[in-house]
Length: 498
Image 1 (cartoon, helix red, strand yellow):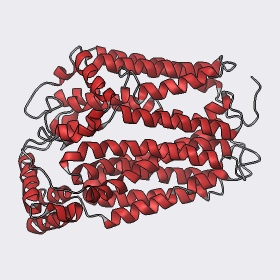
Image 2 (tube, one colour; image 1 turned 60 degrees about the horizontal axis):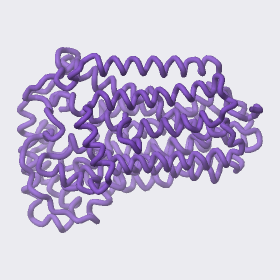
Image 3 (cartoon, helix red, strand yellow; image 1 turned 180 degrees about the horizontal axis):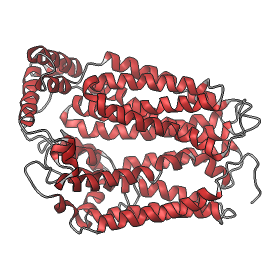
Image 4 (cartoon, helix red, strand yellow; image 1 turned 90 degrees about the vertical axis):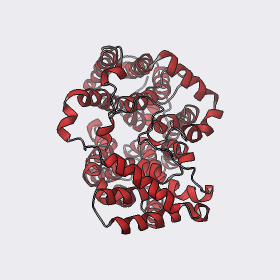
């Protein structure tokens, strides 16, 4: 295949690394999963653990909450914009890397970028997200969910503006880094705010829709990128297009009340006057539910307060306990699965989707980015047909409301099939199957760049297979993303969550 002078190229070292790395990841996870035949039993069964997927995080009987659909939309929508902006960054960056490397379309004098410099642009937000996650660990309880989301929206806005108006590569990478801090903060606080403010009957549904918003953002990023990729300095407009949503997210979160549950948690921890925080919680709950809550606000607040009081009676685990005994086993299993979910590179592969399609024969920038839209739509369809409500309801719903939280998704045939397969075959075989599919996809992708570059179909098949195996497949037997959350939720000890 003829070489395109503007085509992004992978270094020889990177090609060899991609092959060796995929093999190494496979064998690590394979033996990690199969080394203990009874993974769940290895963690042990004690009073401080979540024993099954149907046990609630906090025991207790919840009364049915009164709510209106209209009052539940905004407390979900504004936090979910944080996920949409994360997905948009993936899609837009995939297209921006094509625009910024073009001598005629970049509109800059420093367009001749090496693969390392392009990698800094694409991974800049990921480095920022890492720092944002570390910051969230330290300031989350101090700021609260609402103010953390406001901070995330500010970082989104500043990062997008700095990137869009960057005069050189260094400033652009700094902008990407700042945007990434917003991603880290938003991905930490958005699920918590939604879970703590959503009515229990639809809590699982709303949390799963937040994940849907991430994929929706990816599709929007690919779509806007395809429209602007042939515009001079189009990459600036791609990044700048996220600023209105950042402003909407920030203003919306400023208008929304604080999480009543977080206020009561502060009261339990002695961070304020109990009576004042209780009254503030009632006020916030009334604002969240609207007129439909009636006179039951104080009753629901007292119910939450009693639950938190019961949890607070247990001794809080120290950081050192994470590295001993059963906690260490849970940390290795849960942390290992999360670690390899990230370093197998799903965001990275999607960041380079348009470039990969361009090298596979879609030589025109617009053609490559339009094919990337189809990839995003494929991922979006998978996120609908194998819902994540099942995953998050393991933690955020109780026995009485678990079925209600997932009732919407049961109309989808594949959900029922997935649950049957999970319970019948067990976690380990499905997890290993998902990992196997990912490794084969990465192996094909690395092979394409090494010695199969005259067979462009290999790259296309590898990308589609990767998204299918990681996200959710039409045959629910290779869902690594699904199994990772399921296994992690079943092996984490309750004390480590407090």
